[in-house]
Image (cartoon, rainbow, N blue to C red; front, side):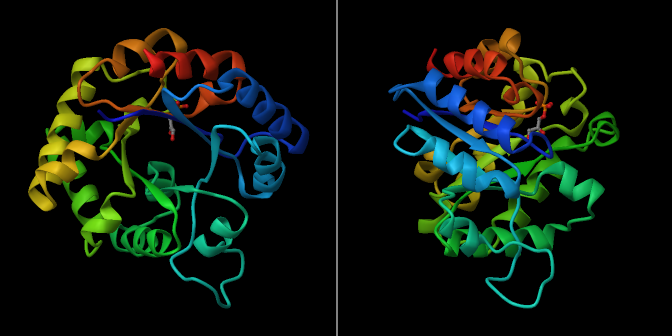
Length: 252
Ligand code: 13P
């Protein structure tokens, strides 16, 4: 049985004090719960304070991005080795905001995935189509490309450290959640592709999260789908009062 995962992507929000407070509230709310893996991904400058607040808790620390080189003269970039060094266990890569607003290519994302895994991080690899792509019936093609190029050249042992996140671009921050059936359809398709690229066992073990306007009111219904293993939560991860009921939905 795959354990559910609920990850908060705080994007470019919070301040030092708000990040510390939110992390403390999440820790208190999660307590000793072992039925779900909770992850929070604050902005880079707050990894330290949030990491401190998470000490001794069951909530894991993740980052929202990493560069594709371990160290060097790359002004402004952050190495996945540094993220591991400051206590991150996870990193989100291939988020649509980075693909579409910052121009990240499939090739760049693949380099980042490989290095992050090499540095000991678990990777939350995001895939997802735009509205135009969905309307022109290219959803499968696009998510398959994101998946295939994202994990190209990753050794089977390292694939066990990859978590997929299906995030339809049209559902992110819009309030238009994919229906449970739409999410399930794409998740099942992704799992079948992982089985073909890797192995049936590997595919059965790989967590596939859904992201895009997940709220307390719709989380349970989405998480109940057989191939949905939890969520990657944006807006609703910024308030413990919204995030914790979503965590609860992950416990079932
Ligand atoms: P929202 O939950 O705000 O739609 O964001 C989803 C997302 O992009 C998580 O990575």
